[in-house]
Length: 269
Image (cartoon, rainbow, N blue to C red; front, side):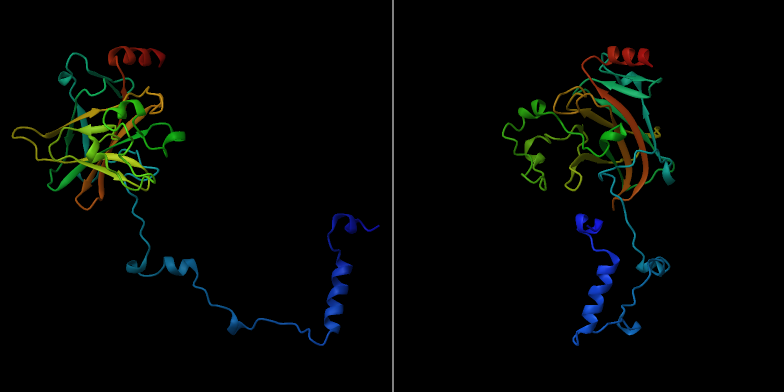
């Protein structure tokens, strides 16, 4: 038996015989495409070489699924600074070795922002992200336990997560919050990320920096939350139109004993 019979595939001689049989039929005719019948598609390189007004421009959101964490001082030389003297009873400490803040939950962290030159109509967005690349695409969320008091029925979000009602529940899903009077709490339904945006006021007389107060509403070690995955906070300097003109990143661990955890991690390194 022919090997092709076992496999179920047609061999070349069978194929040729079928074609001959078809050609013997008066209804069979070969059809060939004429050049006029072939659609003239525009080559992609021709599109790329088109005028600027027709070029496709993709603007990535600072809260997209894979947010950028690279330092970018930008045209305003955007800087971030911390003053350890503002820590009350060791509520937070900073490790120079690890370049990381260790802070207790719901304790105030004063961050100083500096621009050169100073400019009006700018704002700073604070977005928590996971530091490890394997988890960067996952939004940082509060654990169910810490959300329970403010939202016991889990009504802060619609079932499809397209609508955020956190404003009615003390901004329950926002890990990073600010006491700034004009703080705006933002939600990106495409990436499921929560962030807080504050206007960058002018520096006080005699000062070169603007101070913004932040606090964190969940611990890094919480199960069903951050689950001990290290996080960073991405601070983006933005225009009123949402264009990013600066970026800085700060590693943060939210824990019950900041000083102890700092010493342990430094010893491990």
